[in-house]
Length: 138
Image 1 (cartoon, rainbow, N blue to C red):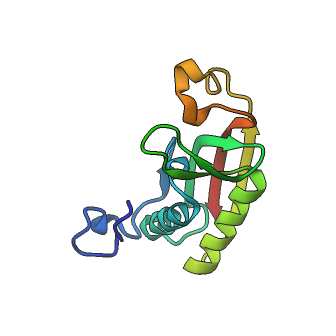
Image 2 (tube, one colour):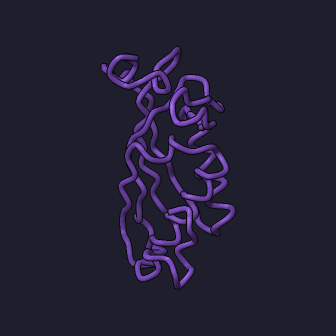
């Protein structure tokens, strides 16, 4: 997904403008903010430019949005969203892609997600929540 789907070499190229919905679960939170923005823009490229096309899913979030460092995977930096920052991300996606979005997002307790034993050090810690979202094209 980090490769531009508009490139003829991309395996996603045939899908440009042909998808109504994208389910992206446990995905965006694996990357830093700039890569998340790029991935969202690539997702938009795949969608039909019609009202109601959606990107939806869930991921790790945090009460306090910001950059975190993964304790596994070489200490890579990732961005954890709260409701406000996730909506701002999609506002930026809209500006850069010429689209408009309404974003429903919620942070919720996630039993088991904050357990260091079951999820690993990088998903645990203060303020960790499950973020569920649906970004809908207007």
